[in-house]
Length: 71
Image (cartoon, rainbow, N blue to C red):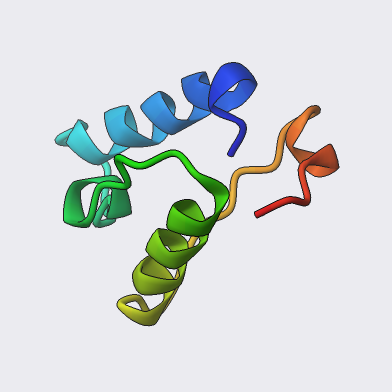
Protein backbone atom coordinates (compact mmCIF):
# COMPACT_ATOMS: atom_id res chain seq x y z
CA UNK A 1 0.00 0.00 0.00
CA UNK A 2 1.01 3.60 -0.40
CA UNK A 3 1.07 4.76 3.22
CA UNK A 4 0.74 8.39 2.16
CA UNK A 5 -2.49 7.82 0.25
CA UNK A 6 -3.97 4.43 1.20
CA UNK A 7 -3.55 4.33 4.97
CA UNK A 8 -7.27 4.84 5.53
CA UNK A 9 -7.96 1.48 3.85
CA UNK A 10 -5.43 -0.24 6.09
CA UNK A 11 -7.17 1.26 9.13
CA UNK A 12 -10.54 0.21 7.72
CA UNK A 13 -9.33 -3.40 7.54
CA UNK A 14 -8.13 -3.17 11.14
CA UNK A 15 -11.57 -1.84 12.15
CA UNK A 16 -13.30 -4.74 10.38
CA UNK A 17 -11.08 -7.13 12.32
CA UNK A 18 -12.10 -5.55 15.63
CA UNK A 19 -15.81 -5.60 14.79
CA UNK A 20 -17.56 -8.21 16.94
CA UNK A 21 -20.14 -8.87 14.22
CA UNK A 22 -17.66 -9.69 11.47
CA UNK A 23 -15.82 -12.94 10.75
CA UNK A 24 -13.09 -10.97 8.95
CA UNK A 25 -9.72 -11.70 10.55
CA UNK A 26 -6.05 -11.43 9.66
CA UNK A 27 -2.60 -11.26 11.18
CA UNK A 28 -0.97 -7.93 10.51
CA UNK A 29 2.59 -8.42 9.20
CA UNK A 30 3.46 -4.99 10.59
CA UNK A 31 2.96 -6.50 14.05
CA UNK A 32 5.04 -9.59 13.27
CA UNK A 33 8.21 -7.95 11.99
CA UNK A 34 8.80 -4.24 11.83
CA UNK A 35 11.09 -2.68 9.25
CA UNK A 36 12.81 0.21 10.96
CA UNK A 37 15.60 0.87 8.48
CA UNK A 38 13.92 2.60 5.54
CA UNK A 39 16.63 1.80 2.99
CA UNK A 40 15.45 0.00 -0.14
CA UNK A 41 17.57 -3.07 0.64
CA UNK A 42 16.20 -3.38 4.20
CA UNK A 43 12.62 -2.95 3.06
CA UNK A 44 13.03 -5.66 0.41
CA UNK A 45 14.57 -8.07 2.94
CA UNK A 46 11.78 -7.35 5.42
CA UNK A 47 9.09 -7.87 2.79
CA UNK A 48 10.67 -11.15 1.68
CA UNK A 49 10.64 -12.37 5.28
CA UNK A 50 6.98 -11.43 5.64
CA UNK A 51 6.08 -13.25 2.40
CA UNK A 52 7.97 -16.39 3.49
CA UNK A 53 5.98 -16.49 6.73
CA UNK A 54 2.53 -16.27 5.20
CA UNK A 55 0.14 -18.40 3.20
CA UNK A 56 -2.03 -15.57 1.88
CA UNK A 57 -1.49 -11.84 1.66
CA UNK A 58 -3.60 -8.83 0.78
CA UNK A 59 -2.19 -6.12 -1.43
CA UNK A 60 -3.97 -2.78 -1.22
CA UNK A 61 -3.80 -1.04 -4.58
CA UNK A 62 -5.10 2.49 -4.68
CA UNK A 63 -5.01 5.29 -7.20
CA UNK A 64 -1.35 6.05 -6.44
CA UNK A 65 -0.21 2.53 -5.50
CA UNK A 66 -0.60 1.21 -9.01
CA UNK A 67 2.34 3.39 -10.03
CA UNK A 68 4.66 2.15 -7.26
CA UNK A 69 6.95 -0.54 -8.62
CA UNK A 70 10.20 -0.10 -6.70
CA UNK A 71 9.47 -2.68 -4.00
